[in-house]
Amino acid sequence: MGRTAVRRDSKAAAPARTGRKPGAPRKAKAGNIKAGEASPYHHGDLHDALLKAAEIVLERDGLGGLTLRAVAREAGVSHAAPTHHFGDLTGLVSELAAIGFRQFNVAMAAAGAIDAPPLMKAMARAKAYVAYAQAHPGIYGLMFRTERLDMKRPSLHEAAGASFAGLASSVGVSLQQQMSDEALSLEQAAGIARAWSLVHGFTTLLLDGRLNDILRRLPKGNNAETLLDAMLRSAVVRPPGP
Amino acid sequence: MGRTAVRRDSKAAAPARTGRKPGAPRKAKAGNIKAGEASPYHHGDLHDALLKAAEIVLERDGLGGLTLRAVAREAGVSHAAPTHHFGDLTGLVSELAAIGFRQFNVAMAAAGAIDAPPLMKAMARAKAYVAYAQAHPGIYGLMFRTERLDMKRPSLHEAAGASFAGLASSVGVSLQQQMSDEALSLEQAAGIARAWSLVHGFTTLLLDGRLNDILRRLPKGNNAETLLDAMLRSAVVRPPGP
DNA sequence: TGATTTATCTTTACAGCGTCAAGATATCAT
DNA sequence: ATGATATCTTGACGCTGTAAAGATAAATCA
Image (cartoon, rainbow over all chains, first blue to last red; front, side, top):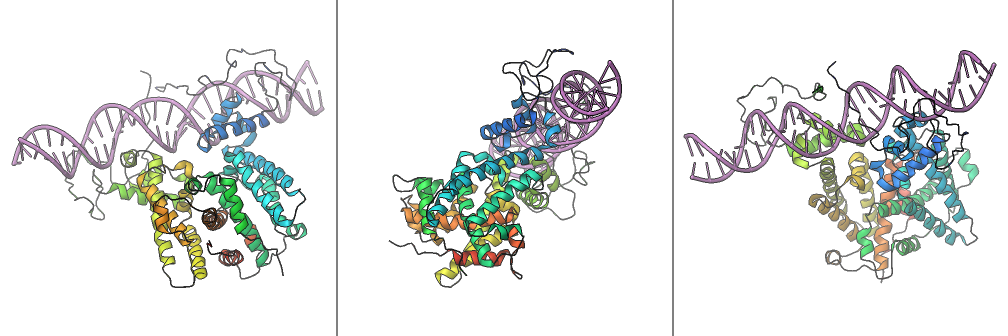
């Protein structure tokens, strides 16, 4: 009775969506929306469109601005549309993180493909690692924001696992040993932990602005990259010997 | 007009608060509430009580559960009470992070006070670093969740700066050089970045569960501590040479 | 002391959020 | 063609942060 509902959403949200009465003549074969047309009731490829919108929102408004409703607005659909495709916010965030891991894996594979002595290769990989994070700070942050992820999601679990495998193999742990769930020697494990901790720690500190004081006080001509270089040079990479 | 308000808060929130009509005989000198008494209108030391409540909520419900209203409920006050003391959620979170940095600084100072050769001291400090984070995972996470902090808050800025100073000095940068905002050599900066990245990276990976796979496959009798030990042993600590 | 100012806390209100349920619409299978 | 199913919208609810206004106690001052 005495309860007057108030509409709160979709104020100036999606353009050209209102005012289409039942029975509009939209056809639009799946996955092939003509540019410029008003959006049809069935989007066609909303799943991917939402993920792209999410990436835009994330890098534009930061993690705090990454909400289901903001993504829906960005994609021009109703606020509840994402639920159907991702279940909940954790689902969408997890899928976005999975995309990040896959992008990351591609970048790391490219960096590892060069022909160079082991030490040079290791440095190139480390630089590619940091470079990816700097190019996609929002996504990299997401990839390691465990409390907002569902690591059991197959796509995320797989992509993150591939990243880890790449890292391990670059430190000298054979792929065979990885797959078989075999035990690691303490030295092998330490090698993985050391390499990963060093580069991940540097990356997160850098992205979080925790190195700003250091960077500001560096000798002229230096920056985050040269600092990374110097840091890696000073961190001797020992081959995993017996 | 047709707008019926609905009460939504304080369902079974604070005990023994309702039913105290105007003119109750509470006196309670500031900062000295007798245990068991019903809470007075003026709490006396709500600022600290809220911070303690916040820490409880954080370690119990995680970062997602750390809300102004949850903290107010935990402290037994109205949902808007925290605003007066901290301005907004960022303010409260930042104060909590500042407390974390101060606790952390105490722990690190204790670890650095031992009498041992430099290498042993460095290892002891690193272990103390990780140990603090493991003992207070929620707070440690907060201390580095930059997007939720206001680093310009004096208390936080100061406490975080002290942490950094302690770190730098433990790597051989004189306090005098730090205070004077003097330039750092690339080697000095690399030394700081390397030590911090290594230990911070290990800590965050560990707390985020990213090392679980490694830990599970370690030889019998090993755990996160022995892995850290092995990692630090393999990371040669070079003295900051000229 | 008594009056007034100030600090502290509560109440009320509102918009944004995630999420569920129900309805509308388009595509697919038969 | 027709029924089933997938996709998307609408509406509602309780949660959140936060602003504004009211209530109460403490502090200050005459």
